Figure (tube, rainbow, N blue to C red):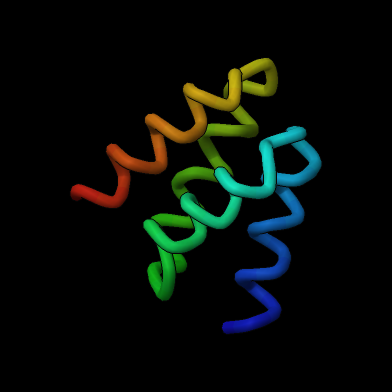
Amino acid sequence: MKEITQAFMNVLYSMRVQKKNITAITQLLWGNIQAMDELVKFIKENPKATESEILRKATEISKT
């Protein structure tokens, strides 16, 4: 799980998401690989997504 989480965080880092938001997003989706995959899919489909859009999507995913 640690490797998956680190890879997930690296994706967020590559999108230039601030460290505090990477931490928040990771905590929102902690332990839910499917949710992490869904957010990565969103990022791939929206490569110009803003940090706030990514954070909003993570929040939306965490509520499902």
